[in-house]
Image 1: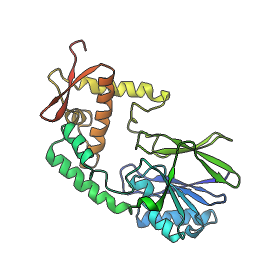
Image 2: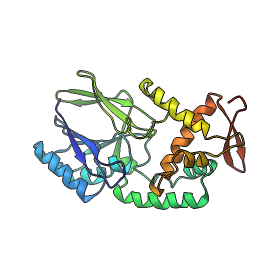
Image 3: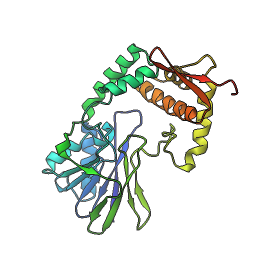
Length: 275
């Protein structure tokens, strides 16, 4: 199976993103990059070097529905004359902004994020939406764990790998132990500690210890802990910072290492007297 990685620029802090051309019948691309002229140009160049054009694409498969991975899905689908788009059913980022849902706003409030910060995050993610065209449910076919994506020369098996997003998927070619993943492996931050593979446990425990040390006996919200954990975080990354703090705090609470109570609608974590 011929798998061709194509690196695309993004306007985000994370830097370039890889998409993968499966140069076998039916021609498939895994992820698309963001909706920017620079990404479109780089993608066309990469396809051309491999001997293909957008019009040749028959399937568009998404690891997950963040803008840097799914932004061009609708445009490519249209240019490729209704190529099929595949995404896991738990993904919602391709349908609406991630801070539009009442549930997300409630969780941020519970984490102690000040209203003005929530407003800033909302405005930020409104601007991020320009990097992706939304896809309605009837534009997509659903991926399921264990599905096979069949090619003339073999298969890629769908592996549901939730954590980065609820519907994140990886794709495995068992014949040669090849794995195509989205953002399952992140170099500068820890993945969700509940769902990380064993080789990350040491790093997760070290980060969790740092988090617990930031929790005073008098109590702190996840927002306050995130500001201590990442004191120099800019506006773009405060949502990610509080998300990581919540993950570690919830893990520590589930293991009985810290206490949790609700105060004025906020979740307040407290250092236990034995710590």
